[in-house]
Image 1 (cartoon, helix red, strand yellow):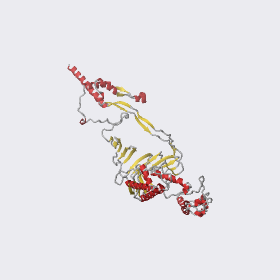
Image 2 (image 1 turned 60 degrees about the vertical axis):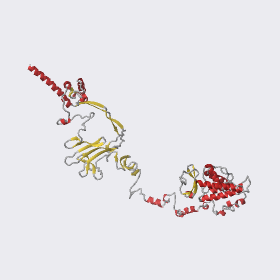
Image 3 (image 1 turned 90 degrees about the horizontal axis):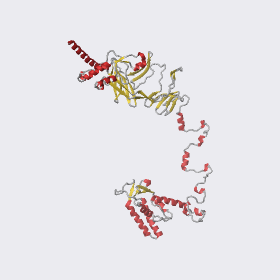
Image 4 (image 1 turned 30 degrees about the vertical axis):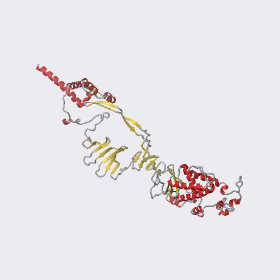
Length: 578
């Protein structure tokens, strides 16, 4: 700022506009009550400036210029901060408006892309500016500097109009204090009686002053006279509020408690001592605990988990679980046999399902027919639950044609017992035309027939020793060699098979340690079990296997033998003819 504030100067508009020129902040509004007051102050400031500086005409000219500068960027009175000027254009730095809502009415200036609020008491603050001028370069900083200067002034004797003190002393005469208007409302004689504090005594609690609001608050408190029986050293005499008493009346006594509503607990024991009773291990669950071991848990989803199930001398039926009123699961004893049955309502089928995180993975189903019932197994195939195999009183069969094998290369049956042989499809409608065997094939068949001998299974020797029985046949590797000797591809023929498989891994879950369970007489029903860690196990080693379809091989050999017999018969006929 180029012009210094003069002590007592009233020219608000002039000084703020000088600041605006330095920082591109617009003038104080003229179209509001505050602007009108500012304009009046400008006129008074012009007169004062004329008297103090001898140039009233210059001060008036500056005030007039300030008002004209105001008209350029003042946007008028508004309830909300504008985002464009009155012509719809972008806001310029220094734009101002009078906010009719904020702080009950105040002036705001657009600076650095935001609206800055100027307090409504700017005029009074500037009017009290001490001599020495303001060095701040924006309105907000100028106001802060004014506050600092005024605070310093208030702490000096001259600031209070006391001038009779010595320069090196701050001890004025009493008359110079009581005669000043600044102290007229505070004291005239120095006595507390003059200001209505005759009964105030800070050394006595009874005489300490309190406000009317404090007294009203105290009047709302309970009468001290009604607490004569209160004693904090005796439980029987300790005070309780009405609300506290009502809350205690709702509590059940420790001895023989009774309840008309539910017993609730988020986490912790509900009934029983530690280690026994009902327990809520986590929110939304309920467990039964005995000997500090959780026996079963029911979650808010209805899922139940059991650590162990032990049935000792229980009557029939022992367990009934009803779902929707249509299904019963009953464990009972019949003629000494344990029975686990599923009873469906009406003529509905019974279903046993297996689930995991993948959803429904397997199902067993019985149609519960009164004549010939069928039991079916369903498993996931290609991600879809599909019928796999079924059984009825006449047959065990795959539910889909020609898609299921009996056994596998690495999972073979030892023996198949049957009254008659296997029936193989041999429908001409499903085959290519039959072609005669070539000379190479016939020759290979004769050679294979010559390779047939006896052998013993190595596994049988390990299990039975010398008692292992002999079998008749050959080996796939030997037959492959014969076929290749005759220029034939052995794997082009269905009687030669080769299978191989990868290692198959499984997962054995962890099992926590289990205590022993005893009956009422103390007899151990289930022995204690040690903990088992979770581990990955090999279900099947990787391997390979050569196999034969003996029925086809025998027919292959038979064709070779027919050829040999035919040649022999031809020779005999030739010999007989000669």
